[in-house]
Length: 397
Image 1 (cartoon, rainbow, N blue to C red):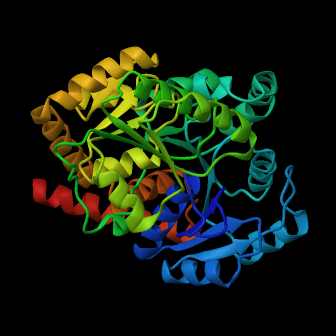
Image 2: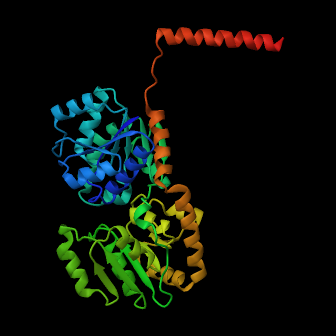
Image 3: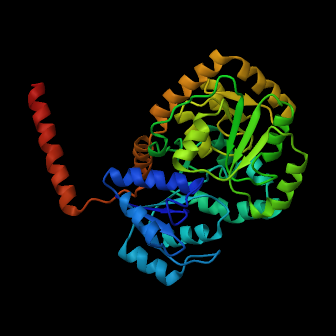
């Protein structure tokens, strides 16, 4: 099967968030023997191309603007590298909507993964009115015409159904895959005498739960809070304001990847994620794979699953109440060990890349159009059925 993934950064080395998920999934699908292409807007450099080759993936560069892919380049690639299925990642990206319309003209099915972009919390960030209008006028049509919709969190389906209440094609929940390779050799090993909370992600004030995390630390001054990530340029001044008033037990670090990221996670007493509305954040899946107990905000899409399967601690959005629950958890070592065991088992059964590749491939196959058999095929089928019927009749006698 030839698969296109659209919505990623151009390099596995520059990947983060959605891009990390795409590259991990694409690599697993390529290892399963499929022809996988990742469509990128920027021309890949030698490092990106070499990284893709190592993973068995082809990078497909198509120039684009915010509104659309270059129509001539797109048509040439669709003709020369025609996909069986196109997997569109994310929402509120105008060029994905124009691409979807082009795919319909070419009679190529596409699958959408919204990556948590339709949750009420995600809708409330940024330009809410513009998102609401775009959602109704553009995204509704794109979703309705898709061959399938895949979700990383079970709770996300209600948000999709609100957008497309009459949607009749497949809606499938598939957890985000985790690239286990950078985590190899690490396991949850916190220092017994040190209470350490860790967060990894972009440091964007007002969106990624940075203020609640700092306020949690204010109510837990016997514990350390370590935040790793790049500062969003739009949040530079707001973050500096927070730093001037934060307590001394809060520490900011540069973004970490690979073994450094695995080490930072494995040394945490707990990983804390206070962003609401996301589906299944990559750092949470990585922490779970290492057996690190996680505390997640109750509005996260995966919060109901965490409760039902006892995978970790679910805390309120309000910082003081969250701090109270986290403090209780850190005082109960045996409870932390239970969550550690549960998350490792869950990760092994559900988050392995090959598992995700297999599940997505089943969705893709169900999304492919039924091919009408040729006249010869119909004749062969008729004869085979006739022979089978006669044989059955004879056996019955």
